[in-house]
Length: 323
Image (cartoon, helix red, strand yellow):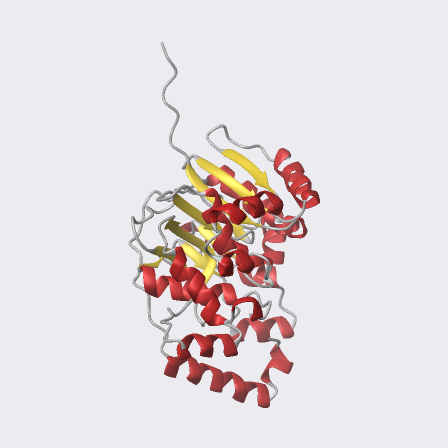
């Protein structure tokens, strides 16, 4: 009797440096242990030394047979970009900005046209058995997180000046899409936002995701399952008064979460919380909830938010509770 046909693997991508391994190791291990989809996971990093360190970390993980994992140094992707993107100079140059920007570009260099891309941050945790939601034929699915994290303001304003529509509450922890974006439009967008003069700021990535969301369509992954940690004002004050970040994470509804994005400081707390054994035992989440439609972020709403931040800064709010 011949062997059964192996399941088709869903292609996942994660851009990370070796310096993120203190928390990224948990992200990779929990993903591979809890995801019931068969994954072809591509870990994309910087220099050869990073590739070797990440490969060594993966070798210490018990990878289920349904998955396949590979690690790629930047030079490998540089060579592909030089040929595949010969007509798109702004896309090629964008890859050499902030390392986080390569989450937008490098999966496109490894995926075949029309192929699914599950794009993941390294500061995730998967507490329960799950499968990824269906990826639409067109459009992009992103995580939902208020408030807006579009920075720096001068680049956001330049987008509005150029007539670029932006989505609200986009979080960059997980994205699902297919390799069918209009790369000529994306190249032109980068040029209009500043091209090689763009400041090397991490959250410019979020501006481009927000523009992609409004152009391509799609929606927010259901936040009940795909949950982003919120650095709330109350939480900031509680930590100033001595509460630990790990203790604050106890309040999350872990039993209903497929994926937890511990952005910011929370990524350093999750490994300790997991090691303490304080989380509930893993369950299995078998359902897929429908995505929520993207909300547009108008210029008036954005400027109102900036005025509030300016007012809080003048009053010394951030000096008290932190940024």
